[in-house]
Image (cartoon, rainbow, N blue to C red; front, top):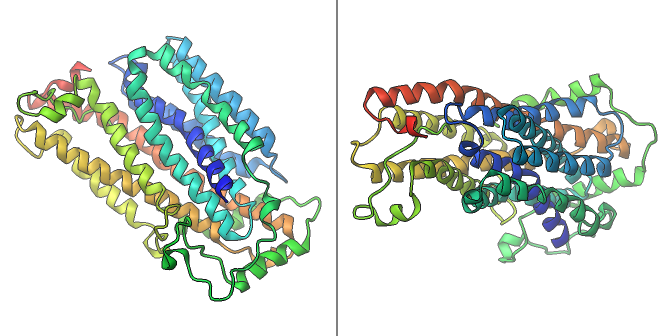
Length: 429
């Protein structure tokens, strides 16, 4: 179980870390006159294409080895293009290649988690994968904060080595799913890990004899050859997921003067120029995303299904507050300390909400039981579960895509609003 958790943590970490490095380096990758939202767009649109199209185009079994090697090569190539070509078109192309690879990789590892049984084992892997994706935000933002002084060519070029960790993990660390097929039932009098105070990852949702017996029933049925879901089969599977899982799933204008060492001793140690604010916001956001995405793997119970939309509702409220702060401001112009602290708190809350929405939606779909009509057909049940968890990934990417499209005109509008009230910092980037 430890090897399984570590493997999926590394899958999530490495698969998503390049995405975060690109976002954190946005100010250094494009000219100052180019809206930074275009980086976010190229960083998510190809991933969205992979998540939307691949589950429907794919027929039959998933070839995990081919996918993993393809994603590794594509990610590395994309980062090398960003590093060694200076033109805007070439860098956007490199970002798009890495994005497509990241989207396909995330889809692949979410689907890979469903191949483990019983459901408690699958949930264990998925919980650590979500933790890894959150850790990618923290590691990626921190890495760029540290290496940005080396420049784009060296800093981004070094990151092209990271994707090769994924195939190494798959072949040398990840245990086979057959190692868990005959997991014994909990002993009589077994209590949940949280009640006993043990340090297991979380209380499994599927640990009853009835549920485990159902899973074993699938295994006893054995594989069926030539099983392939049709397009109409997939539409039927995805229709009930829309409202339940898919619907629930920042522009650089939050700028302030460089804090004075006399007035703000601690802030002045962190912020040395106005260009430091954007990577700082990224670092704060990704740190809180990491902790919230790791919530299930550290023992915090999953959100009840009826509360899945709550984090998204809170995110909408936070967006309105940040737009108000950027355009009008909560405090006077000379109170940048209060403004910076307020923005830090709001971005932290935004990160918690984003992480909770992600890990809980995927965890719940991972724990769903097989459809009764396919419960005795192991291969069909396996393909249905892989498709269902893969099909909801596009909701997460769609939200980011719409945000990136909205960010371009919003950034320009907010900058104009700031200049009208005499705040010219957004023009100095």
